[in-house]
Length: 342
Image (tube, rainbow, N blue to C red; front, top):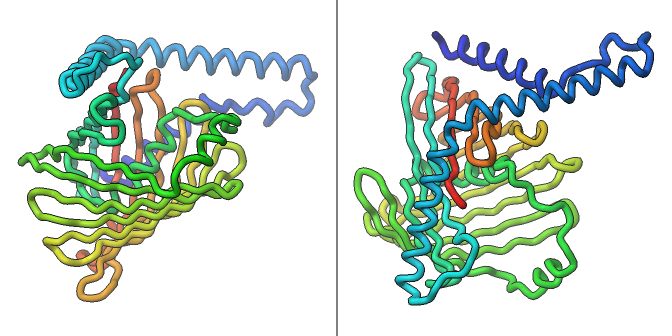
């Protein structure tokens, strides 16, 4: 099966899914009486509710494993926090998160590959309020990962309140211009690599516009010092949709040049359980002078399959890379993601 066939099949299934989420009852109802139209609307809502209930029932077999792993991850964080701080923990949860991702990737050559990503954020609030001990698999590519993380956070189906309270606004005024967030941890892969980061962050809002600026000097045992700079501008579109522009520059001591990227995305909510993003990216390096190495265009559809821990992504992409003479390279990615936290 070719990538084009796969994309056609996925497009067909997504179309069916959209139709099930948003049934169209008004195409041929101009001559119908109002009570019949109202009956159709009510039945469609009941149909949507029944579909969601069926989804919940179908994926409920994950619940036992989810509860077991989440409980043990949280227990690990609590026990370690008590041991290092010598204090009895009293918080409801530590904020520790284990994220598992499994990608199935189809490429132009009909090759199929599997990619696994594991990230554990182990938070110890009593040990040190501002320092995080983090265990994670190494990012495949830093400037790709930067924009990907921001996108996933938008469609984690965990929306914050629209308007902050007066108390929150007062606290925000007292916060410093720059937030300092040091962390120490391990990169897990074929080898274990220790690192330490000194992240400083500034966030500012101007009506619907928001900016976020991160500067992260760091030291990794395998290659030495580095610096990541990330600048993001975002704007709310309508009530829930979001435009985002992300600029990244990263320098490492071992390669001694900058990796650069500019990323744009439009993110749309399609209901309580799904979202879609249209994105494009430009990537480059500063060696021997600043030049483009890759163009990227794609769409990501993400759906919350079950409760708030199981997600599915479908991502068709087109890349134009310098290494291949900027010829188009098509791929189709299926991603299953599970989030374990209490």
